[in-house]
Image (cartoon, rainbow, N blue to C red; front, side, top):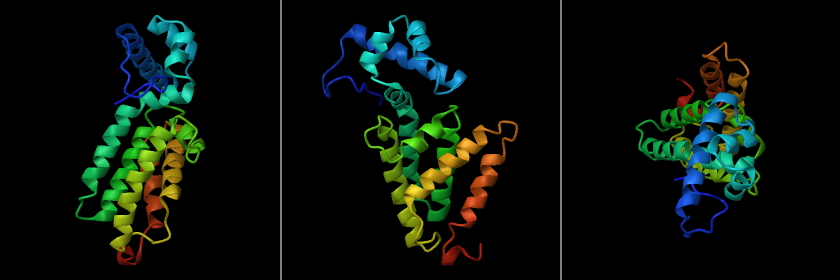
Length: 199
């Protein structure tokens, strides 16, 4: 599902370029997991056996590389959103999906901050992640609001910022693995609509 921002759409890469691209993605995924999303791009290129110029030909900036790395996880989140759109309880489906986003954002130190800072910036390569997530979440939110279990004045933009803020807070407190769950529970109290007021 990942694709290079530097390639013309529909134009296949040469075999050597594809190998370099795949190596860079693999090393970036490892480096981001070990060192966070601010890991050295020079080190990623070196560990991939290519020069920094090759990295930048495939990924013009850090956000482009991050976006490519996270496309697989994004696909999983989007698939899950489609499944949860059929949930018997729309509010529970929304909540489960928000929890999945928090878990994903917490897998790489710095990801939550990057997603928050680019959430409304369509010029950022991370919009390839932000826009589909926002659209998927908006569908789940609309369904929950239509059922009366989530307040009508809640926006998907606010929810996305809240989930990233929770992931960021949890990232800053690794000694408290239950923090994200507690913060999400607290947040949910403010989401409830009239039909959920009793529960």
